[in-house]
Figure 1 (tube, one colour):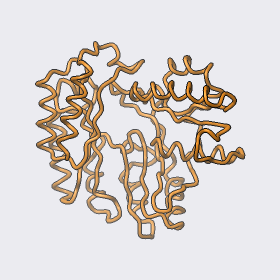
Figure 2: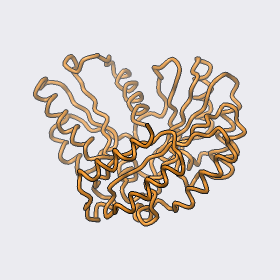
Figure 3: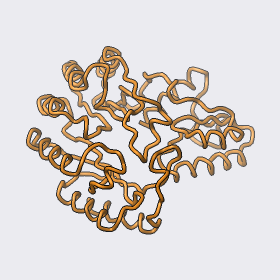
Figure 4: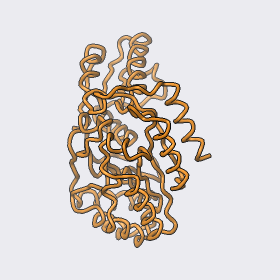
Length: 314
């Protein structure tokens, strides 16, 4: 999503007459695409702004992306402009000769207890299906071989139901592959699984975040499914799509996560056999429900658990 957003920002700047430079020291304007999902990323933004101001005081600095209100207030006097991410155009002039990102929806209605997306991106909004199909068709005609459909919760797309949209794109003439991310397990319907299985252009690589392998932690995260639900879903996917490869996201060190609960996550990883894991250590985010909970797992323990999970893929 961030890469796609950055592409659209680049188009907007070019339309205003700006040209890219390879070194930030040469830039008269610096645009920073912010992600507030983790505190470490926000901390880097503060450091980067200070460094730019020191190195080139007259440079114009613009912030955009997922920015919490508290960070906007702290940064507004240090930067020149803050652009709302939702006002950026959906289409973009893709730069890569082989792959293209196509946003089909933005925002989220799930309100997972740890996530800032509903607060920074707003509620779910889906682009019209015909607009998406026309954009993909145009990209295929230009020679793009890989089209990735994007959304914070891509399989909750409502322009028309997601399986129908995938079928329409799959029917576009040409030699190309369709990917999509990120999916929520609760929206991975039987109809969607069947569509993936029967469509020759849709990738069999499925990114399906589990976040935790413990039911109590999943409930506190407000994920809307149990470990058993996820296992059954993974089993169903592999039955219907024998070549399916499942990747996932995991958050370690969620408030009150015990060693036993973390071990449940380890056990789940062993059982499912993910092809890839994107792991992160929990950090409190303002305005989220989890921010009210005591962040009581020590930082060193979080790092250890994250390392344990990632090493299981090697």
